[in-house]
Image 1 (cartoon, one colour):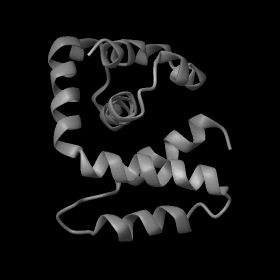
Image 2 (cartoon, one colour):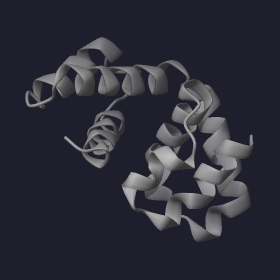
Image 3 (cartoon, one colour):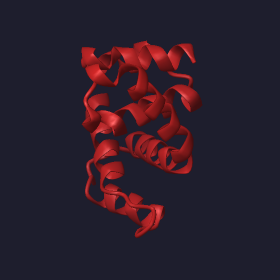
Image 4 (spheres, one colour):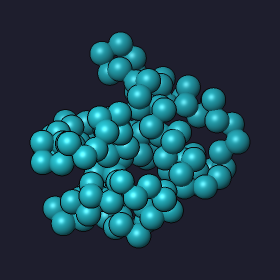
Length: 118
């Protein structure tokens, strides 16, 4: 499976998750059950990104909200979960813009660049 598809799985999983009404491990198991085609390394990626975004939710929300304050007129609000994933990946994996170029979404270069320089 390609990188973009893995990111989309993470986005769908985080979009449907509410920490107030559902346990993270149950939601994660639902995500994995709905994607049986994932290989072990792909499954590990989804688990790490989902769990990390849930665990560090407060930090990621602050990061993305500050980004929207500065650049919000140019970015879609519906992409906030994607930006949280970008931020998490940068902060905790140390990924750079090169890792995200495979997404082929030029409109997201600003958030990526901002994460790199923070």
